Length: 232
Image 1 (spheres, one colour):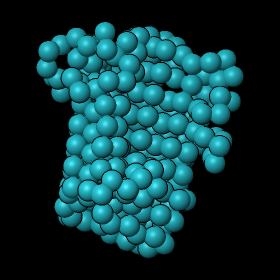
Image 2 (cartoon, rainbow, N blue to C red; image 1 turned 45 degrees about the vertical axis):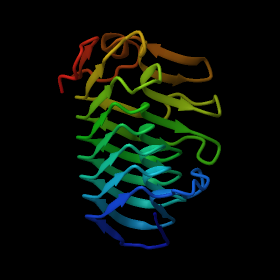
Image 3 (tube, helix red, strand yellow; image 1 turned 60 degrees about the vertical axis):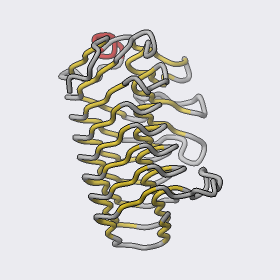
């Protein structure tokens, strides 16, 4: 794939990132479609990242002000789009489908997630804190289609977690509204949202109404469960 390090003001636009890492290097380090590290003011737009052994599109290592716009990430063996250990991102109008993980936000703050289609991934949307950034803050999830389809296997559609077992989604200021949720099977996806509530534990919400009541999320959201086809 492509690696860009300390490339401030980079624009990655209109590329095909297809079938990379055929030798199966360790994906947690750098393998996959595209990885950005330690760079500011970057735009990643209208790229197709597909069939990579690793993440599709990935920004890491204290990057700042990264915009993921109108990309398609599909059939990657890890996350379609991954924003890790960085600050400030707009992730908008992307399609991430049939990846092992749709969209992953790790140890990052000031993230705006708008108008994306995240569908039929093994794991759909996950936001979490860890030891490098003990309290990532200010993550907004608005107006997305978030679907747990036939290929999805995680028992929650959305996961907000803290690996250190210290913080909550409330402390991280993760907010959501106007999203559309689909579960093809509530047997496989028992939980709509799995929500960190440390130091008490984890809140599991079983429906949109439950999520609204327990967490206060998606007051204007919609949800369709146990329908044979995704209506969105």
